[in-house]
Length: 247
Length: 280
Image 1 (cartoon, rainbow over the protein chains, first blue to last red):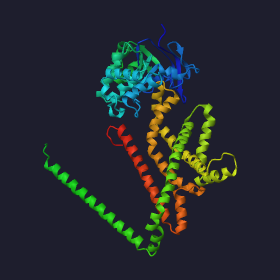
Image 2: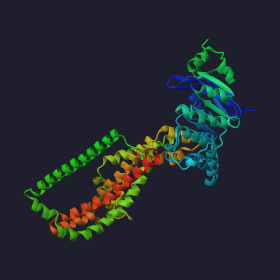
Image 3: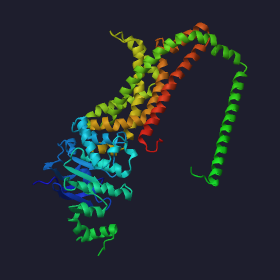
Image 4: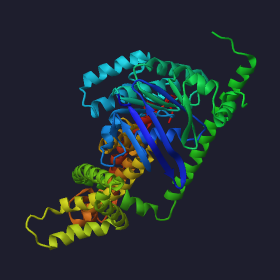
């Protein structure tokens, strides 16, 4: 079986700074892979490269066996099959919650308005926000906005869901509701998640990858990478984040 | 009923006294300024003469019907020119934001256009079109009114294009990223995400440009069509009295007030709809 996502020796350079350095990573169907690492380690850049918001400088990325780094590929078609959720939600402030969710299904996937609305309301029901469907995003709390953003990304049934530090902009008390939703998606959605929430990584990840200097230094089941890391730099990072003995 | 502490009652009383005081101060200073202005103007040595030549009631009543007929032309011209300038301006603004190399000529053309016509005085464009174009003696040359309207659209579209472009560029790049990540194409992102936000944001300066256009529509009188200003000019020459110009001026102000009021209302409503606090 081919992996949903297959990144091989991906390289990305911003003005002479190597952000991704021959990074190789595969994500299987319905697998949840969590990327951890310090700010600037390349987590967000990798997600943006996978979604073709950035162009890689070398290496290949395959989605369902198709090379999406081929310059001849139609980027819009690729993005239709990938959902991306941002740290700052990036909901459209001029559209109601419902219109935020139905925009892509209607305009990109050509669903009828009724069908798109039906599916959107079902998704909003799942996150308990049907009552807010007609509201504008600014009327929602950060946690509610981020859950709408996740639902918006899910509305087009993407093959792969990318989550970029989705709880970093939230008050601590609102983090839980967003993580609950993501935990709910586990098992039915292929996800690549960049996060600073180690406890969450431990709960939701099938595999944790530690990034440093634009490459993966250590990966494996969460209890291994987060509990007894083999690499000295992983231990140093976890020591700073969660106070694991640097040993 | 919750009981209010003595301290809070004292504070409320103090604030009430302060607001009564500030209303009184405002009223007094307005009265003083008003009296000074009236005394200065009516007390001027030439006031009687000025009043007779600019504010003659009988002549105003006499001129009003014809000036109103002329104003109707201004209003129709304004409506057509406003729509034309908005559409052309929006088109130019969108062309200037295109990034693909294939669009380079269009982008360059749109940029040169805004540079050229923001720099050219409206009057010269108006003369070129209304006197120059008919001089070519081509078959099917439109009327002076249409040519004058085209001159207004050409010049105002250049300003409006820059207002639209500022609006487009003020939409945060993360909004485009979000739209593109959902699979929307460049065109769909522009149409459904960027432009709706951009237009809302620039609605006040746009309507401001339309108020300016509304006044400049009167310049068409220089080319010949009988609009409100032209009627006032004719009447002024007939009566040897400037009152018809004042009549036209007052009508122009009255025409602008609804447009200005709509601008404010649109701005406030857009701000309220998008903000949880209900304040812009």
